[in-house]
Image (tube, rainbow, N blue to C red; front, side, top):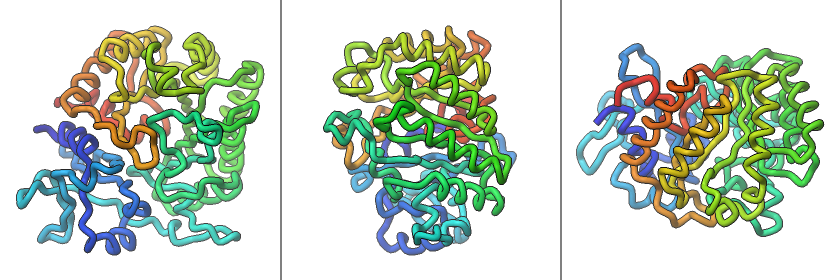
Length: 372
């Protein structure tokens, strides 16, 4: 099996963490949320140039029964094993120094932003989603349990943390997202403010992820301010293309018409341009392949690429007991999506910042780059 195939397999099945390793992993490596089953494992790139392929793992309940187990090896590194047999060698990113810093209010910096792959820092600016507060969450979502983070964070503290990470030299691009807020900007205004506060002190490419606003004049105002603040990439995330399932899976967000996404993507493209406007679709939440691929084709016909991610059933989500999508299905979907992008002269490897550039949450960029 290829390295990319092994990444997809680990994301589907999860990875057991022996209890005796947890203290060592927390203290010495980029594993601030290992106790809650969230981690980044890096596999060696198949091109042999020393790069790493990050694999973001959300264990959920399946981690306890996964056939794959993290283990140390005789050379002092790590591997993933099946029984007594090595499955794949991995490396773990070292623990950044900024994790051991705290805000003036005493909040550890790793509860504000975390490294999710080589050079990639991510923060969920607000994890108290309005949809969850009214009892109508997206059923695949557990944003309130993102890593081991504070649910509410100040924009100043997040910006300070990004600056520390950049100055330490462990971060060269950033992604910012948020739970949906009951505000005119649905939380986008806070993401833009973090970008402004950050770029006033360091220069770093930033990606913003958000949902459509009801007010397109406000959207334009925020996006123009964002690009002035150094934001290079945006993703307005539809999550599910299947019209039958959207209201069922996303009781509130699923009511947003697809036409509203089209208008939002159009506004984004005018500002950020081709290859830096995305949407996210989650595979494995009940949709069929046809609806998913038709949606990817529809978005691509508007010059928007879909960052396809596998559903990782997370503890705390309505769908926490659902099976993750089959690895073979994911590899097939990735391959089909990449062919769609090539036919439309779109390049998923070309994004300047964020989760798409980082690649840890999905193998779609890996499939575009390597033979599988």
